[in-house]
Length: 221
Image 1 (cartoon, one colour):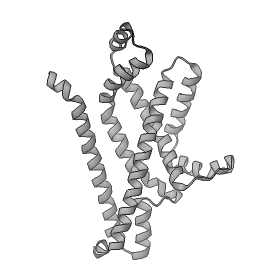
Image 2 (image 1 turned 30 degrees about the horizontal axis):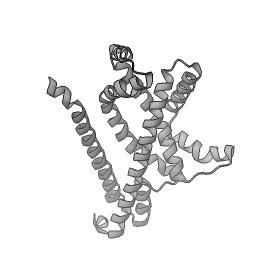
Image 3 (image 1 turned 90 degrees about the vertical axis):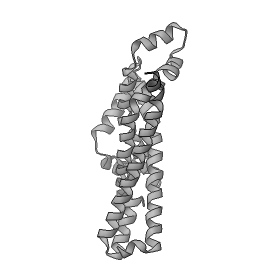
Image 4 (image 1 turned 180 degrees about the horizontal axis):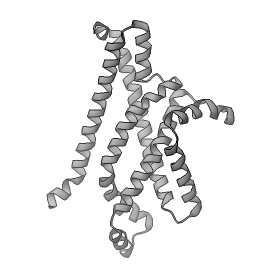
């Protein structure tokens, strides 16, 4: 365990953790935006939008994330001639992957809002976009938040797969230090502990958000 007292090791673990968090946050925001757009498109009356949304969701839910990252990093540059940095490629890949799952979470949450709410809002003269943003989304957010929290925690751990395309996130950083110090037990234990702490913090943050959003309903009850 003495290796964990080494300032260079601690600094490297910190840098790897920062990259992991940056990647997870970027992918979560990107996945949320893509998921919302895909959910709306899948529920659209326009057949082309529905087809695009369904195809996107099925492809990215039906193939492993690792294969998607390999395709974006190694195959796509050969097809398009454009090579992106490893971190950018990982952020895009994780966003696309998360967006496909988020789309179903959002769609299910929107459908869970009582139809009477939409009908009442329409009767009051609200336009479809206003109904979505002012009536459906606020209520759907409360329903979707627990699942979105699980999605974020899963994405935090899935970000370790970015190491296969040379992103120096926490896992790849740890592997490099293990190769240099020959101390796998202490270093991998420390890495596991960091993931555990980050997951626990995220879980508590989402639980607090869930409580805050549901507080008016508890008060009214």
